[in-house]
Length: 195
Image 1: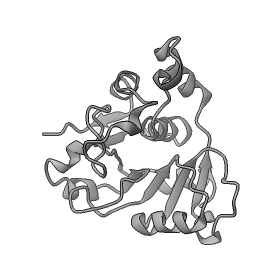
Image 2: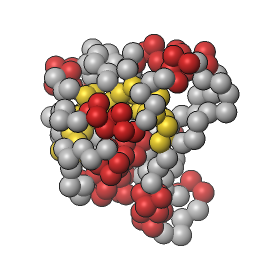
Image 3: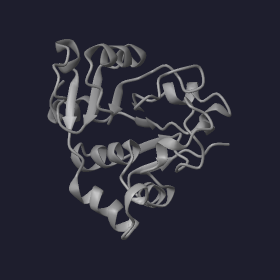
């Protein structure tokens, strides 16, 4: 895969769903809905299971997993043909079989500045950074030209993640308001509500 052009061709004219990691995904079985999409994108540690379906077309990550063994372990959970990693290529050698499937992406400066502007003069833990969910929406729309991006499992940090229920320490640099503003006002986003 290794290039955005190939990825653009790969998802062209397909239905796309980004699966967030909200704890609310455990409230009912969303597996049939999720698996019905052509392209299912999972984020960070949000591996497939009975509640959130098993299909994974793309695994998008921002984590700096530099140990090849850990990277392989993550990949085995997702079994995706494509990996999108935000940030520069990792410094330690990446296994060739995974490298061939990986597209390295930089977050657009405009997106980062938008989140920092929303945070005002806040410092430290209060500083805002776009989450992996906002980054993948921005990348799909701005770089790959996807005109309809379906989202499920986004509650703008009102709950913890479904894979670590009740924990919210992963949200120290993400707050709900800038995320919600970006996602709910995005022209390409169709946000599935949790019922």
